[in-house]
Image 1: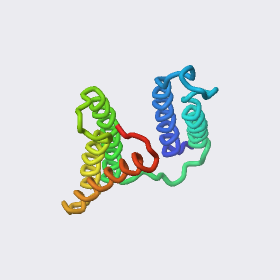
Image 2: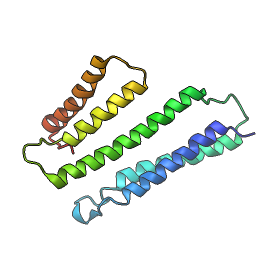
Image 3: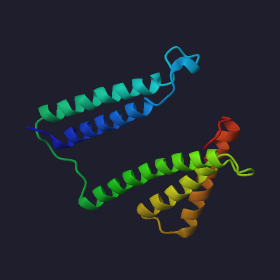
Image 4: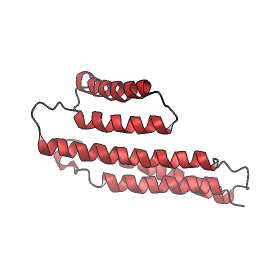
Length: 162
C-alpha cells in the first residue's frame, strides 16, 4: 500500500532542495573567499541532507501500510497554499526592492528600507489571511517588527539589510 501523504511530502522536499541547489549555484566561487570550501558549502551540505531525507520519506511512503491520511480540509489547504504563494511573493519583493535600492541609491534613504517596506506589506497580507482584523494590531505589528529586525541587525550584529 502507498501512503500518499508521505510521498507528497518527500516530493515537495526534493523540489525544495532542487530550488535550493539552483540558488546556491549562483553563489560566487571560493576564489574571492579565504574559506577552503567556499561560501556555498554549508547550504549545499544542508540541502544534501534534506534531499536524502526526502528520498527516505518517499521510500517510506511506498513501503508503509496505508494508514490515516493527514490532509487538511479544503479551506485549510487553500489557506496553506495562499501562505506559500504570499511568502514567495515576499521573497521576490525583497530581492526586487533591494536591487532597486542599490541601483537608485537615493541619498538620505536609510539602509534596510527595502526590507522594511517588503516586510510591512507581507505582514499586513499575512495577518489578514490568518484572520486578524484589528487595524491597530496589524499596523503595529507591520511597522514595529520590521523596524526592530533592521535595528537589531544594524546595531547589534552590524549587518546591513537590503
